[in-house]
Length: 570
Image 1 (tube, rainbow, N blue to C red):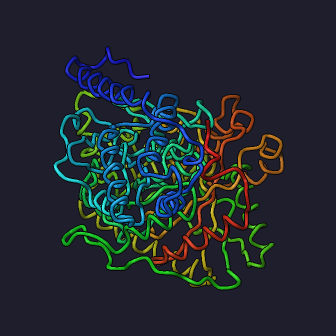
Image 2: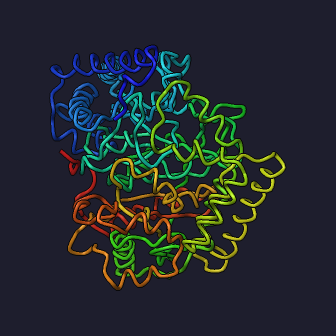
Image 3: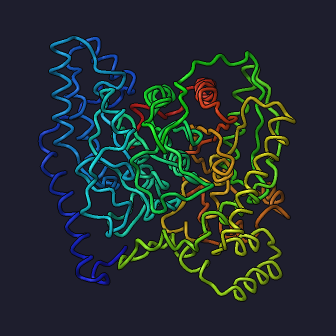
């Protein structure tokens, strides 16, 4: 994938050193850990309950060893780990067991829950490389605040997990740690950027995970891999102690969020971290988790496609099956079209590329460039006359004015233009509030998880703008949950003539052609058979708890469907 011989010797040594050390830690643990399906089939909530009840065999150490064994097998198949904390985790588990034996009290609501965290989270004594060799061998001198909250609550972190280079892709690959595979299909990505987390959770190899989301980085992996997550608004979970390539970027801020195998575990995680933060610049709203009572009859807005790209039959079906389940329970579901979704994507590019992605790419030094970052490297550096010419040609010869505008938007710009873009994002938010929430009085909005299920590896370089479906809600900075609904079924999800007729004059013809046309098109329900399909459940600002409650309602309305603890990929 990335031949190390093409990298300067000093960087080859870093990559080989990190991978060799990781492998030695994994190998040292493989023979000493049993595998018990009862532990792996238990939710995080159930694990705590069993330990608290003193049920036979349910100790923090036994549970941890089972998850470590499963995680090792999953890593060897799918390449999920970055940093290994097995020794530290076992010591923490033994300490918890001794403490419980002496007091008969659990330390906190996460007592004995084995979990993993995305590589962005600082853990004292370990690297946060985020896919750059230039960040290697520079261990953190303190824990991220979320890590502290996890440990104070009795949670046990046993590994950090893989992500794309620069934390900025819908895939999960980098030249330092390699590529993470989707547990349901080795030919497809587990998603980005929290793909290592999603792959472990989808394999019953971690009881809870933590990641972040700047353009879909929690939701896309959950959708691709069949897991659960919540992207909160910016000020519900502190981001203190996380490593990102462009710290301080205004306007579009990544949010920390939990990942799990059930809605109950997402709620448990939120109860641990909401309303708790250090004083200073990373302080969050002093708003603990609040219990909510949903209306007896929900008013749900939904859409099966948007004005940027036509959603695939598989992902349309996931929304429609969810709508049918809600209507069966008496809830009101109203179809609508999100206003000018393409505009939110243009604003996202204007803001994130304001320095031409110079800060982000400066960390590459001698590293090889992941293919998903190719456009990010070259497009902002084009001379203005050439950018304008390319945009004109796209618009003139393909008729795709939307994609042409995105080419124009992706460039370095003076601060005065950045201010205009930030104001434009605020204005768009106000328009969305008026046209969607105020005009319709929706409780929540139901949306496709993305236009398609998990894509084949390396296709993100061509399909990066599919993230418009998730980026919309980063620009709006409102809470969104993702839950799995179904799996790709070739008998139901083919591109029919009826479906193709709805594509005419719809959104970006350039992007739709890449996604659906030709013998090697990435959307192929035969090759995607069995891949998970999720939906997004969107709430209003500061209504994270309502989103979680609706996630639970939807999950129960859909009924058993092969997701959750005990249903992981093997």
